[in-house]
Length: 198
Figure 1 (spheres, rainbow, N blue to C red):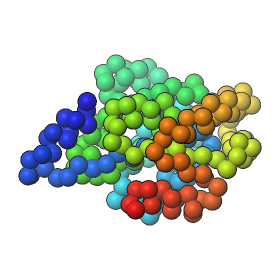
Figure 2 (cartoon, helix red, strand yellow):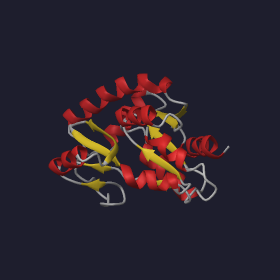
Figure 3 (cartoon, rainbow, N blue to C red):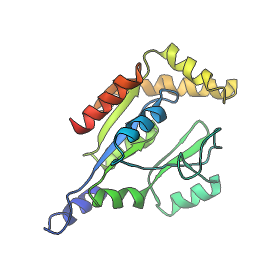
């Protein structure tokens, strides 16, 4: 519904051409964040939508750059106020995409990239069928487990929960327009750039 109202407003001469919405998803530990950073370094014209989360910052993460870190109560208040384009609970924490920031960039003709969890990606596909959806796959499940354990930031219980989620999420890959295996960073970033720019 939201995208139709935007498209209708773009039919007059004065409106700039509409931007595009790109959704990047995949299981925890697959390297979405690393791919995203590399892509943005090469293509600074892309608008990266910073997500909101209730999880604690990891070492080196900056509020407002990596995520907006807020309390569960505040997050639930924003959900009730309809402030999210999509939101989901993953591994015991909430994640969401601020609505107005994204819609404003699309109206301004920008290409907006969302790096989000599977449940949120499905919500976006339902409300923005014209979005390009990309699913990032690991070279193997064993490699994914090594990456998650290599972070050294999660308890054994949290690792087990992430691996169980990842096992289920990988089954969803065929739902997405493009699947890219993140085996070699350079190749994977090039594949994303080709999907976006041809």
